[in-house]
Image (cartoon, rainbow, N blue to C red; front, side):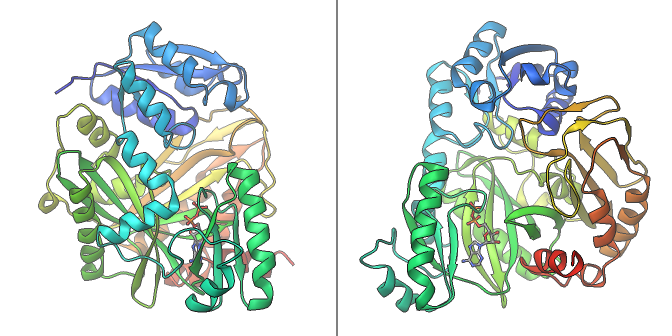
Length: 449
Ligand code: ADP
C-alpha cells in the first residue's frame, strides 16, 4: 500500500476546490496549480501550496503535462487528482505520472484507453454483459454505410469514434438523409478530434439519460452507488440532474447497478467511473463509460452519504473501498442545478466580474463553487461557476426546497442560468418527473418564441 501524503490537483474552479476539501478531511497536504488568469482563484487561496503552470489558454497550462509533472517534482507531491475534463481521461498523462513514480488518482492507463475509444468501449461492454444500443460492428465507411443503416433500421445516428460533448453526431431519419449525415459527422469528427472515424447506432426517439456510478478497488472488488438521471440537456450538455431517477423503481435500480458493478469486478476496474445509458421502454442501452469523477457526482453523495473523492483517494493508495455493497443505502432524493455564467435563454457566455454573491443555506443544501463577490470570471474556460445541490427526504420535499433555495441565491454583475432553474422548478412536467432527453430543447424552443 502506497500512502499518499501530498496531492497535486490538476484542475481549476469548483472541482479543484471540491477535491481540496476531501484532501483536507483526510489530512493530506494539497498543491494547487493555476494559469496566470486564475492567480486569485479560491482553490489557489485554500491550497497549502500553489504553482503557476502557464498562461491562460488551457493547452499551455491545465493541459500542459510537462508543467504539471514539474510542479509535482518541485513540491514533492506523490499523487495527482485530475478532477474532470482537462487531463482526467488522458491515458498518456497517467502513463507519464507512473513513469515518474507519481500516483494517478484514477484508473489504469489501459482502462482509460479502452473506454476512450467508443467502438472498443462498446465491444468491451458487450463482453462484460452490459446491454448496448443496436448498431454497427465497429467503424462505418462509405462502402458499408447504406447497408448498415438498412440492417439497423431508420432513424439512425452517426457518431464519432473519438466522440465527446455531442460533437460529430448526426441523425439520418431516412435513406435520403444518410449521405449528408455521414459526411457531416466525419467532417465534424475530424475537426474536433483529429479523427474522422464514425460508427452507427439505432436512434432512440424518446429516451432518458440514466447513468450508474461505480467505484472499484483494482483488485476485483467493486460497488455501485445507484443511478443519476441526466435527461435534461441542451446540445447534449447536462443542465439538471437527479438521483434517483424518477423513472426507475428499486428493482430496476438494483438490477442495472448489479450488472455494472459485476462488470467492474470482471475488469478489475480501479477508481470511480460512470456507465452511461439511454433508457427507453424499460430497456437500458449503454452509450459510454467515463473513467473519472463526473460533474454531477454530488447528488449521488447526497443520497448515499459516501464521499466519492475519499473513495477515489483510498483506492488509489491501495486502502480499498470503505464500504461494501450491502452497507450502501439510498436515502431521499437529490437534484443538482449547474449554474453557468451564461444567458439563461440563449446560453451565450457572460464572463465578467461578480459584484454580489450570496449562496443559500439550510438543511439539505450544498453549494460547490469557487465564486465570490469581486471574482472576475476569466473568459478562457468553461462557464460553470457553481453547482447547487439540494437534498430532501422525498422528491416533493427536494423540489420544494429547491424552489426556496433558488429564491435565495444571489449572483449579480453577470448573467447566470439561475432564472432557467426557477422556471423549471415551477414546471408541471418536471414536477411529474415526466421528461426525456429532448424535453429541455423542446421547452426552450416553445417558450423562447
Ligand atoms: P458524447 O461522448 O459526445 O457526449 P454520448 O454517446 O455520450 O456522446 O451521447 C451524448 C448524448 O447524445 C446522449 O446523452 C443522448 O442525448 C444522445 N444520444 C447518444 N446516442 C444516442 C442514440 N443512439 N439515440 C438517441 N440519442 C442518442
